[in-house]
Length: 275
Image (cartoon, rainbow, N blue to C red; front, side):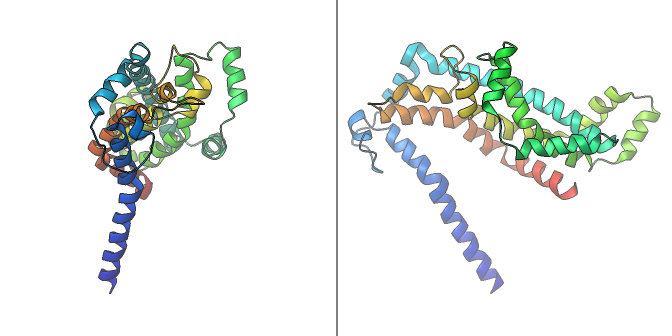
């Protein structure tokens, strides 16, 4: 009976996953393959004529190849943000786990507060304008690091607890200082959670729409998510081009999840179970 129940629950989960993930993705592909008139109907149907390649070419060429510029900008922002998140998150997580002090509880409180409290958009914009970082890519990188640091620190802190303290003591006896101990002994052992942080945060930052809209307005530093405005306005929306654009900016994160799915699960479960 228990085995039959597990099969039923598994079957229901698979069907639900199909409706939640595959059906919307199929709708995106089908709409991107249609012409302007048929796409405007927004029906879940096979296109009369396939215009996928023409739509993709038009999307890429729109506004002097703005989509290509947006891909470059989003890639730079993602790589820079994830690099800082990995370095700072690993350092803070290591110190909180291995070097407890009277400040540990205070820092842990602020880390948890960063997960619970919603971001304050207007004060952040005011602060960035005051120091000259508003509408700049490096300012937006700092915003992404600030928003993702709490989650990253918790992952690293839990995973550091799985590393035996004897390794630290042996490295210190061999003459390793704090910097060498962290970068040459501890950090290489954090590979599973590093991969998890890279994939999860990279996809989240690459797909970020609201923060880019708030902190990086304008055409000069446009990101891939903001290119969706190219094909919709108050009175007219080109759904065939809009969904072709969505398809293009969805493929990179989808491929990342497909290839690194096992590493994500391994890093999350190892830090959660053993921490």
